[in-house]
Image (cartoon, rainbow, N blue to C red; front, top):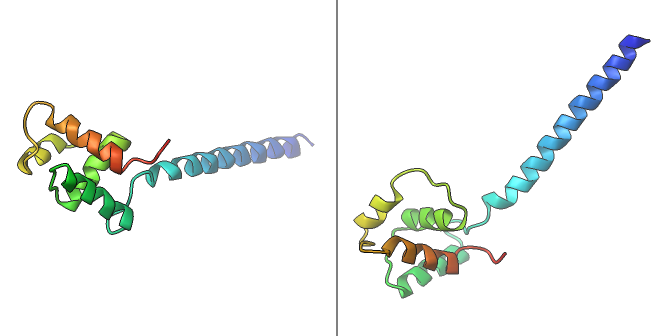
Length: 108
């Protein structure tokens, strides 16, 4: 009798854990698609917006800039990468991030 009750408790715990994992995965899935993917019309419009503001970045760098501006948390040397592509000077990084926020970040 007690073994059955313990087994039911274990099933409930496993079900609750799986439910929490699914809810977490679904909530994070929206964040993963917060910026446009390369090759889409939205990404092309974002690149054109960068070019209209004087930033001619390659697509990989432009995607990383959008990710950093909209979501944050890109590890690495984004500053050096931007400097190598001509984004230099006081406040230059923040200006390109502002343009990225304008054209790539979803409206919240």
